[in-house]
Image 1: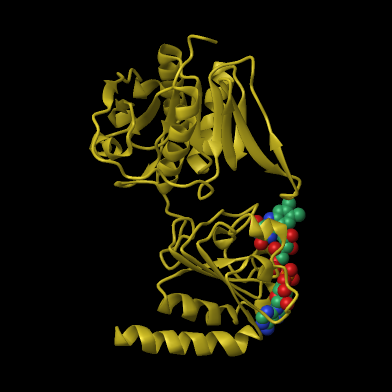
Image 2: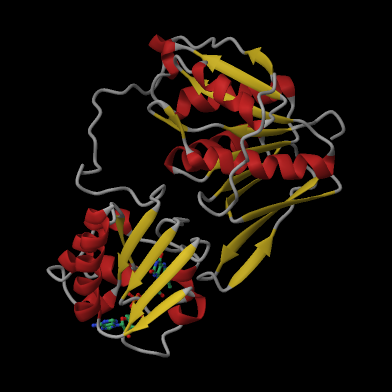
Length: 333
Ligand SMILES: Cc1cc2nc3c(=O)[nH]c(=O)nc-3n(C[C@H](O)[C@H](O)[C@H](O)COP(=O)(O)OP(=O)(O)OC[C@H]3O[C@@H](n4cnc5c(N)ncnc54)[C@H](O)[C@@H]3O)c2cc1C
């Protein structure tokens, strides 16, 4: 075990931007590394991605492992996991942290199985005790928190939910050691290849995962048509539209808008919950929002226990007034 050292963060990016969750993991890795006296290392896999090294240098990282090749242009389980496995075998990290995104949830178990080590998936917190990573998961409908350890195998691996940890603060520029790892993959021998890419996210749905403002509707909205009232407020605020699972299950809005335990965990500056009661499964998805505003006609709705501002009343009366007032106010600025 003694030969394994350092904390690695798998960096995920979308087009030309490093995803926010990568900075959340770097922030947590730095906190853990202080306790375990280890180095924080970023792992960058892709094609033409050396530009990200500059940005990472402002996050007080010790090392960057860079694997660049045309074969890594698009994510494929086979290529990405084989490179990450080779890297881990050669450099022997103590901990590998991977975002619990679509890519991360596919990549991490493959890597863990090949390395014959343990993986704790979809963690909401991470601690460290005497070299052992202690990941925390929420289980049984978010009613319990469970800590797990992997004392006999290394590296220790975890995938971490986006939007549950503080992002790493930007520091003054440092000079992380750059390790360029050669990619030796013969693309003609791959079992999988991408034939065609079809974008599934429709352009008129603003993604909730990195939105600054979210206006969310629940069962109290009553119908698909009524969601237009929510969408109008969202449009004025340039916000994303979110929803409770009840609204999604009713078919009023796309699953990609669902906030909560089995949806997306969000952390916007402002979260406006309309006609949402505030069950545990919804709250785990939004309670870290900076400001929470709740509109509900039931004064005893649990959402009022977590909100910063609460309005008791019918959203059909309140939201149009709010939309008009904001329209006027914002047009004056
Ligand atoms: C394993 C598991 C995973 C789950 N995952 C999720 C998840 O990811 N996300 C999620 O949201 N839920 C999730 N759920 C479901 C969750 O338990 C609740 O059923 C759901 O969150 C309820 O949604 P709601 O608040 O919209 O509906 P309700 O609880 O029915 O609340 C509707 C609210 O609307 C109010 N209301 C009604 N009319 C009006 C009006 N005109 N104006 C103002 N207010 C009004 C009511 O007072 C009420 O408080 C999960 C459940 C399980 C078991």
